[in-house]
Length: 630
Ligand code: HEM
Image (cartoon, rainbow, N blue to C red; front, side, top):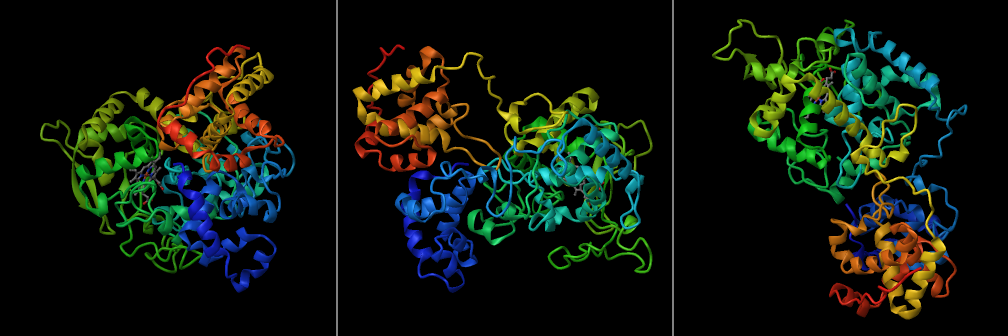
């Protein structure tokens, strides 16, 4: 979701005065040093909504620390106080970094080097072999259900990735923040600390050769494939954050309260991805815990669509995921204190003999409060989840922990006499209640291959979306670019005539110099959609030509300007975005400034004459240069 740039400068300047003076004692030093942004990280400043917005926008556009100053103080001030001025000119290295943590862009990996990430086939095969051995090496501190940790690790990978939300690109497993506050304490992540502990020896063995985020995702993949499930491939290259800072807005935190409050937890709306802060997607027991499968279905559709998932992907993921493993609610008194109350040993369990090895674990485990498995063979991939959903009627029952779940009963016309010992959650039975979902359930029940294809694609999308463009994927098992990665055509063999485009745009400007600010605006608007949360947006692809961007109010009239630029670039096949880049940069060149980069465009945008902007809005900009030829 793009920020509303048009309203920002005024807010920002008023907040500058409010936030930076009088200086707070503990931050006087930072302020004196010109490092205003550091002072703004102080909690009181953080509660200031305007400042928060500034930091949010700067973060989303990846402008780093300097950006906060830019927006807060305006361009004059930034020139004086910021250590590096324009981040694009100061040679800053943190283009891919997040405030408060080191983070590299793809291409900066130390491929195969000692001490750095190693994506070689040899290393990956070794890691994969260790993962598969770990699955069947049950440990006393957390005994494996059915002798196989696979399902637990599918849940870990899905909860790591499933925090992603398409609204602003936040969440996802890149960063590996499921290890930190706030995600690690979510009710939905109960007992996943044990999964991380099981993974730790492998992480320690391979060190920086693999990030936590890649290891968690790879382990999920290996779990699926080791139990016979289909996997499309693996996009490696996730980097680890050193804190949960970038998940603060997912909640529950003051940051989330400030930016995306949820009036009634359980009915949360965009930009939040989930219906319930603290759960990954929806309440398994039905909306607000009411076991109403009919009401659950639309909520599932709503929330999965916030993650960019369609109906087929949604059904494939839920039923494909629940082909494996079980739910845990054998204990009526819950899992014990969570990481906020017991950071050293969260969720110790509360049932069983305190002196026995199975206190709070194995048959005494409480994770969600539901109890049972979805299929008769929970460590084998198949479509029996879908077959059984259709085969039986489902009635409510109570788990030992008192949660309402669903058990099968024979249909009236059944020829068999036995029912399997399986369960469904309200959110599973919901798939029978909606006609579109039901048709997909029927398809997957009848056609295992259709499920294989749908699940492998949806799973890959689930765990890879937050990585952004295909170019960020590294490693030896990366599948070809997928639709969700918005692939672009290959770079043409014949490079465009940059000088020709520059010359043509120069000619336009020499005939009509008032277009200069428009060209700058166009380039700015084109590039400023970039967000570092999931690496989406930006001018690459020149999507400003198409809806929805072309229809944004802030882009009113720019399609006409874009046509000019396109015409200027066309004869020598320069790409549209090259034209944009040149138009934006050239106008500044022309205006007597040295060649500058993006951060300067802001200044020009702000100074675009009102008369021209009005003409743009009214569609009164002429296209006088149709005769251009290079
Ligand atoms: C509507 C969406 C979903 C809901 C409400 C939901 C809910 C749940 C719940 C309540 C549990 C039990 C946790 C426990 O007590 O141990 C669970 C387990 C599990 N879920 Fe889901 N889930 C959903 C989607 C998915 C998806 C998309 C996947 C993967 C593709 C998945 C994979 C699993 C697995 C493998 C387990 C078993 C973990 C184990 O055996 O330890 N779930 N789910």
